[in-house]
Every structure is written in C-alpha cells, then in structure tokens.
Image (cartoon, rainbow, N blue to C red):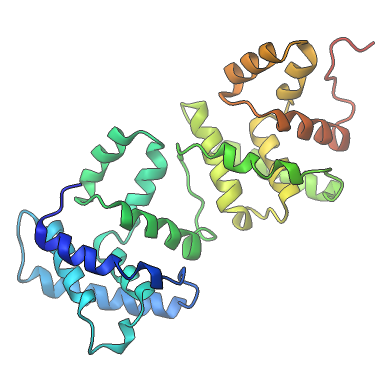
Length: 280
C-alpha cells in the first residue's frame, strides 16, 4: 500500500502504541456514543476547510495528527479509544471488514471494492474485525460471507463426544431455526452458503441462540448436510480416496472428523434414517 510520507510518519507513530491495546474490554456503549459524537464534530469542521479530490487521504492524515497529539484531552488517553476514533472517522460502517468477508481470499476483488472507501489499510482492517467481535457480532446477522473458515470450526470437532446434551425440544427449535436460515440465505455459490453458515455459527452463535458447541455442530449439519450425505458416501465407498473425491465434489471440502460427528448425530436424532445401502 502506498501512503504519502506525511501520513506514513503519523501512521507509524500511532501504531507504535499497539502494545497498549486492551481489546476494547474497558470501553462501554457510552464511550462509543461519546467518540462517535466527537468524530461527527471533527469531520464536519474538517470538511469546511479541506474539500479536495483526495478527501479520504486528507481525512486520514488529519485524524492521525489529531489523535497522535491529544495531550490536553485526557479522555483520549488510551489506544483503544483512539483506534475507535480512527475507525468512526474513516469507515464507520466497517465497510473494509464487510468487503473482506464478502470477497474471501480474492485479493483482486477485495482491492477493487475498496475503492468505495478510498483507503486500504490492513491495520485498520484488523481493528475493525476486533471492533465487530466486541460490539456488533451479537446484534446483526452477517450475510453473503465468502471467507472460508470451515477448518476453524472443525478444529473444535474433537470436543464433540455425543449430542445427548441436546433435548428433543431444543432439537426441534434448531430444526426450525435452520429452516428459517436457509430461507433467508439463498446464494448462487454453494461455497458462500457454507462460509456464511460457519461465520454465523462461530461468530454469532449467541444471536442464533446456540448455547453450546454441540448445538453449533448440530446446527451446522442441519444447514449443510441434513440428509447426512457425508456419512452415506463414507458407507457406500470402500476406499478413502474415493470417499474424499466424492465428498469434495459434493461439499467442496472434506474433514474426516465430520463423518464421526454425523454418526453421533444419526444415533441421537435420526436412527431410522437409512445410511448403509448394504445393510439388510
């Protein structure tokens, strides 16, 4: 990323304080309201002086200068408050983070869409993600995610030993929730369905009412493989190579532990569902 020297110097000065970052844990909704109000006043004053074709770069520079030299204002005495001021001034809707989610690992598409914001800074992107996780993930369901995090979800698979903790009543609730989710999340690409499901399950499980890891994996199966095709393919094939090929063709990913988990799911919730075609 190219940054003019004046911005680069102020940026370097600002981010040298990263070691003081406290993960936004001490900040309240009241702090967010105060910072947003201060940012609104600051940007309004600045616009009256700097209406230029390069407004976003000018804004970035002036915001950095402002937050780097807040010696008289004791309120902005922490890196956490200053980085929120920076986000609210440059990208209050977290477009950078939302574009990152919606483009996955496609850097070309990501950089192209960032032209809407007029600035590209991976440091800010990192803090936007942490800001979202701290203040927003339990408020609004995110849709259209292309960032694939299946491996992150499956890293918790070893903790699933059974689904006995899920009552019949809770299972019915999860089934209804899955039906509603699938009706509201219809995408042209199957990978987007999987990626969005995983993001919602991992990052927004409280908003969905998923109260345990067992419920998260149960919901994942209901969304992605309610007919247990993962398990059926495993039972139909005798060679692991063939199993992997067929599952990847169908689901675009393979994880050996999902077969074990689907066996547990089958045993608990749908033991009458025919899985093995060779059974008599």
